[in-house]
Length: 205
Image (cartoon, rainbow, N blue to C red; front, side, top):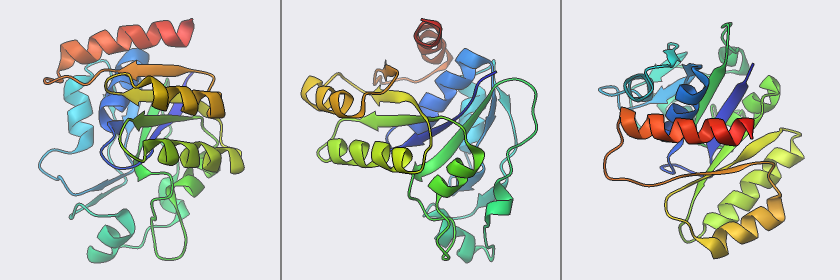
């Protein structure tokens, strides 16, 4: 039974698409504990449309403005704590999507998403994509996971191949697995299903 977390090296790197691919490949339950903004089209709704084999679990907290969870929660009169992040009891596989990167704050008292991930003890799928500064962000994220004793499931690169970036990352991090999801104009069920089939081959060797 696979239970894992999808996190990124930052915001906008493709975590939700990656989560949809994993959820479809594993026919998994999908859970995003905290959604900040985009209330008209929640990430859980996107995954539900893109990955029909998945099972969508409700968010623990839906916050009204698209900013960091600690600020969005304050805006809505809520204070998040570690007790708000108990893993849902579900049979079968589970894919959990974080928000932003590992060091995203959940309150003003020092609670970060990486603290929650450590508490769960689940392996993390780290989503990276090439941009100026992405090597630094990827290496820092991998180092943070290592320092906290959080297992790295592997690195998923989103977008076109960029060998100079990816070679130095893989040489330094030595992830057990790497996987690529191409960037396309239209992301639909067909695309997600194709990537899910490729991912199954990566998982099962």
